[in-house]
Length: 369
Image 1 (cartoon, one colour):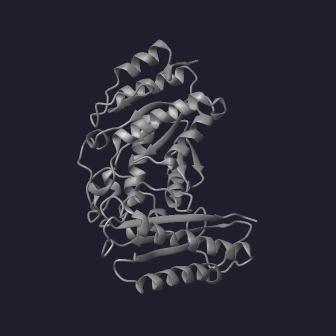
Image 2 (cartoon, rainbow, N blue to C red):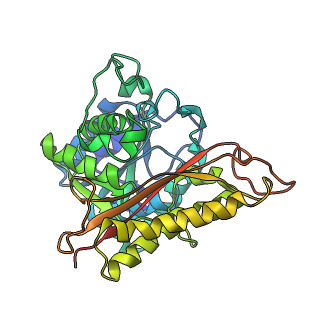
Image 3 (cartoon, one colour):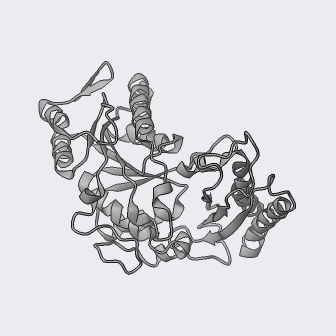
């Protein structure tokens, strides 16, 4: 077994030497003290084999960086169930369509590393948190992840891709046709590289969780998929790396997505089971807020567009006309916060000064009765 000395985890000599031989990510000169950063697959696999030989378990948390409390909650859950935790930080280009701005995705390497170091300290000082600690960060280059061809975001682009249909064509997939192809492909690669015992995803990306479960089932991957409840701010907004672009005005209006879903949930809990009754109240919320915003001056308002509000089967994501109370359903929605038309001096407009459009997604699970 391993032990901790001043916050630095020590392994068997074999595992320690593997960690020492890993390559530090080039994003920063910062040297992590309690975990190592891997840029390529072979040394990471060597560490994984050593852990396996020592009867240790690996929980894996895949991320695109820009870490927030939602990511940390996944790692805490992994620490309760595994001895070692791998975290990936990789902004996957194949998740982004040709008209989506990959360059605008926030990249916060130093902050990410600092948060993970602090979390390891927290886990070490809290015996009730479980035995697990962050052992390795996998921060590959795109050449490592896509070794034979440059990654393509074209719908008919060349490359080796994993597609999960028809799940990937619904909801988010209808507006972002290559998104879930990119998600499934990169997750398959990450699972192959890390071979985790368990992998952890947040409930906020509900369609992603359904697709990952299908991926693991259909491709006979020996990994358990754990889904962790959505982490929210004190105002109820689901945590997301893109929330940094909202600012105060757009964040307040962006809460409409959560309020609409809560209204629909309350209708279900009151005994409503028809699509018209459940989604009708959500529609009233979004229409009322949008009308209120449109009546304001450009310097005061935050406009948005509702992409979809869905009432779907939990396993197939097929739209439902009636909810079977013994089976439950998934309520989900997406809206696009438009750039601010006018800003005021000193106003908190978020990263990008309110000019970056922000897509918000959220969901609530209608539990079986």
